[in-house]
Image 1 (cartoon, rainbow, N blue to C red):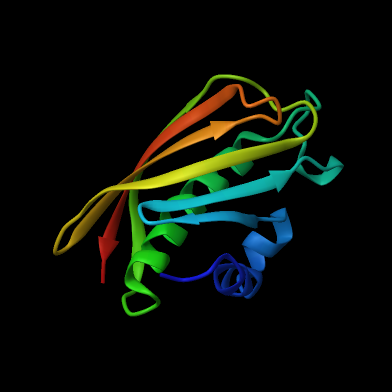
Image 2 (image 1 turned 180 degrees about the vertical axis):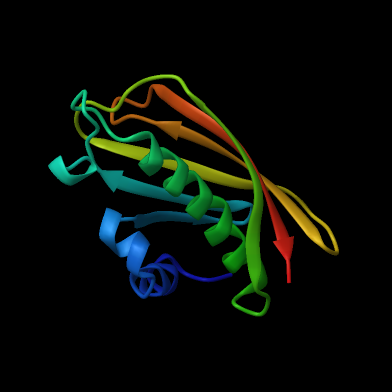
Length: 132
């Protein structure tokens, strides 16, 4: 299994993830935990975290879970995402806990629970990846 530091080094090579500030804060047998700190550049017109950041962090959580699962030995790409938004992030950070639900021969499915800094459920996603 990859370490948190190894996965963070990989995340740092991905320009978009670096741009929004993705941090790896946990690596588990079934997935990863990522965080993104709210900054002015990530706010929408209402002053809360833009929904695209939720989607990007959720997608990265399952993608990084697969990178960890395959230890960089297989390429993957997102084919479908369902995302529910429950609470706006008005301060602090968005925390995403991605879990692999099933890894098959050609598809993988993962779920993501997203929390605010107070550990309140802020969103949830179900994401399908194509294994290349």
